[in-house]
Structures are given as structure tokens and as C-alpha cells.
Length: 437
Ligand SMILES: NC(=O)c1ccc[n+]([C@@H]2O[C@H](COP(=O)([O-])OP(=O)(O)OC[C@H]3O[C@@H](n4cnc5c(N)ncnc54)[C@H](OP(=O)(O)O)[C@@H]3O)[C@@H](O)[C@H]2O)c1
Image (tube, rainbow, N blue to C red; front, side, top):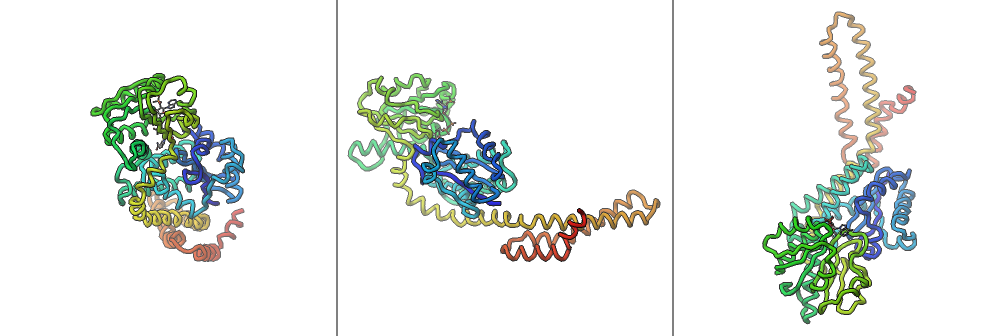
């Protein structure tokens, strides 16, 4: 059995490819079912975020299992393998474990150390458990990745500074505004007329960062007005004008800066919409949705400047150096967590022998107990029988304790195999199997 991850991320694929692979939560159940329906895939879980789609699996055969996952990705995205494969990465065994630990810690994120990825890894665990696509191996691996993500954030400074895609989006707006004024620096957004489309988690973070960067008023548009109003209520010091999404055109006319962060699967702003309105001066659009909320065709519109999630790279690389230093602090912790998982995974090799040894001793114990009890005759009370039975079980458990601990303890593969062979030979474990048959 092999652990493998196949996927793509902002490092290997542009947003126009990533959005084709994205799997919304409502499609997770069927996707996991399709994957585990393949005889090669024993366990599976899917991490789908704006910057990555990764499928973690336990496969029967490495080559065939990975092929099955790639085949799934191709048919799910509608992209032929030859178009998709150059964007995919594959990691096996130790590398897959190490990759997951890095992802959970935020070290593989566009915004180094961002916190949302940990909630997304937790969601992957929850969905895998709910839809029963994970067994003991992935369960252990992913649960350990979540605790590693938490450890990294509590034991290093990586999580400090409230970094997120949303904070980078606000910084990109500041940078672009500065560049329009001939400055290569982040400038205040105080004079901007800002609209935010969407009222979910990312919009909440957008509002927090907009407020922190001097923006005092925002038009907040959402499909559901109540949710926008609920979000606005959490920002009592900001003027937030809540509108239904059907007033989007009006907001586009009156705004100079518009952020979009909805989970819509199709663009909600495109050139044909913009052609029907008269843009007041210039309009800067920043879209952090994946799939994108703003169609690429708006770039041809005069007076419109549009950026998607991949454009955040420009602002992210400006302050990445300091964070890289902090990321180094996390590396040894990640190595330690990865090693602990691998030790546990390797120790599983001893389980069949331990089970056989336990079964063999148990059969001797119960046979000898029966003989002894029958010799004692009816004078032996039920309580005395129980004491003798407990004594026999206690002796077996004590005998087993040391060899079981030693067989499962960290050691090289050849050391463990030698020890397993010795136990099987000395206790004639394979022979006893045959006798049972
Ligand atoms: N979470 C992250 O870390 C992260 C990071 C970067 C980018 N993103 C991207 O940002 C977007 C929003 O993510 P989120 O985590 O904030 O999501 P979320 O908390 O689930 O909120 C979803 C938002 O999208 C709206 N929405 C859903 N379907 C819609 C549709 N068909 N038409 C119009 N509005 C629709 C919802 O409106 P209602 O209130 O009416 O349901 C809600 O405002 C996604 O595209 C995601 O990929 C997320």
C-alpha cells in the first residue's frame, strides 16, 4: 500500500486551469465516492481551495493508483490528460507526508503562513470522515497534519500579522493606486469608493483589512441581504451600505474599487455587463474568487483595470522575505511530525504478526484453562473460575507486552523484518495457521 498525493496549486497551474479543477462542497460526496469506487484507491480525501486541488490517497499499487486519480481529475475537469498533466504534481510516501505537513502549516501557501488553509485541511478531514472515504491511515495522517498546523502557529511566529489572501488583495489595491499616482508604495484607500461583493469568510477579512487601511465606508453586496447585514453589524465603526446583488450595476457605476469574493461558479461581472453601464472615471476590480467571479474579457474594457488571485503574487513577493525567515523556524517541527507519522505507519507492518502471535497464545491459554477447570470439577466456585481465568489472561498479556512493544518500536525496515521473522519462526505462527485450517 502506498500513500500518494496528486494535485495542482498556484505554483504549478494558473487560475484558469485551477478553476476547472475546483470541487465545491456539494460535489465532494460524489467525487470521493467515484475515487474510492476504483479498486486501486483504498482511501481518499480531497483538499479543494482557491489555490490548490489535492487528492490524498492510499492506493494498492503506486503506478495504477496514481493513474486512476489522474484519470478522475481529467474527466472531472474536462481537460484531456495531455493538457492537464503538465500542471499536476505527484508525491509518494515520505514526500506526500511532508508536503501535507507543509500545506497545513501554510508554508506552501501563496501568502506564507496564512491561516485559512488550516480550516480547509480540517474541512477535508471532516468531509472524508462524514463520507467515509478515509480509513485508519489517512485519518491518522490528516489528523496529525491538523495538529501540526496548530503547533506551527502556536510555537512559531508564522501565524502572526493576520496574513490572508484578503489582506494581500487589499494591499494589491493600495499598490495599484500608488502606482497610478507614480509611487511604488502602498497608499491609503481613504479616498476610494469601495464595494465588496460577497459576504462570506473572505469578505469579512476584506472588511477587516479595508478598515485597517483607512477605508471608512463600503458598499457591501450579497445574494442574501440578511447575511450582508449580519456581517456589517460586526463592523460598527465602518459605514457599510448593504445591497442585494441585483444592484451590482449601480455599485459598479458609483465605485472606484470593487472586490469580489463569492463562491459563484460562473463570473458575475463580465464585459457584456460593463458595456451596459457608464463607468465613472476608472474602475479597479480585484477578484479573489476561484472559480473567478470576474471574466477575463473585462480587461479589454476602457477605464477598467482587473486583477485576479494570481496577481496577488506581485504584492506577496514584496514582503515574503521576512516571512521566509520565520518559515525556517517551522521546518524542524514539520520534520518531527512527519517522522512521527511515518514511524507509526511503518510499525503497522508488525500488526499481522502481532495478531497471529496473540491468537496463538490465546488459543493455548483457553485450551489449557478448559483442561484445568474440567479437572477441578464442580467444587470450584464461579468466583474461583473467574480468578483463574483472569490469572491466565494476565500472564498472556505480560508475556506479550515486551515483544509487541519492541516489534512496533521505531527501527529500520530490515531490523523489523528480521524480528518479525524470528517471532514467526520461534512461535511457528505460519504453521499454527495451517493447523487451524
Ligand atoms: N476561504 C479561503 O481561504 C479563500 C481564499 C482565497 C479565495 N477564496 C475564494 O473566495 C470565494 C469566497 O470564499 P469564502 O470562503 O468567503 O466563501 P463563503 O464563506 O462560503 O461565502 C460564500 C459567498 O459567496 C456567495 N455566493 C455563493 N454562491 C453564489 C452565487 N451563485 N452567486 C452569487 N453569490 C454567491 C454567498 O452568498 P450567500 O450569502 O447569499 O450564500 C457568500 O456571500 C471563493 O471563490 C473562494 O474560492 C477563498
